[in-house]
Amino acid sequence: MSRLLHEKSVSYKGYLIIPFIFGKADNYEIYSYRLLAEIGQKSQFHKAENPARIYGSSISNIVDIAKEHIEKNLEFSSQRDNFKSRYIYRNNLIIVFQEAGKYFYDHYPPELLNNIAAPKLFTSEYECLSWIKQGLDGRYTRQRAR
Image 1 (cartoon, rainbow, N blue to C red):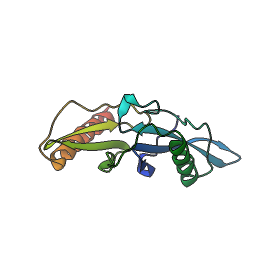
Image 2: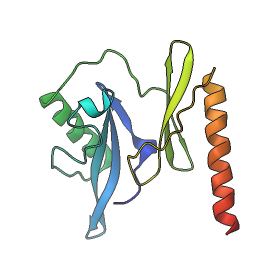
Image 3: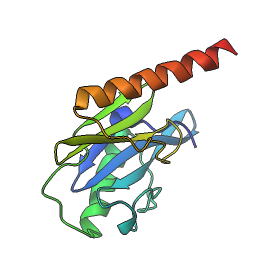
Image 4: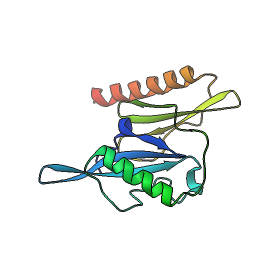
């Protein structure tokens, strides 16, 4: 699978729609998507790849396809947006959560939807993001030095 286009992700009704280029045909890109669910593993669509089994000709097209599939197969109704505090750094997706005055995060690398976050709590979103950035910058520096 090609890199997930985290920077083009869209939050919709408790899901995060993450498009990616599935392939090319006659120099045209074909798009697909992956989903993250606010309720995590309780959702049959958490980390699912293209559950609609329909591909798109553009990012906006595949996002519309995903939204339509979510509407038709809605498992839960969410009034909040758990994905609103999401950031992209070095093509990594970082989602920051806040609960009871503490902050924590999920971290997804560019090609996978495997959460590689450390189990750590922070007192602010800034502290959380700074710690993540420092870790990613250190890893990037070590990889380049080899």
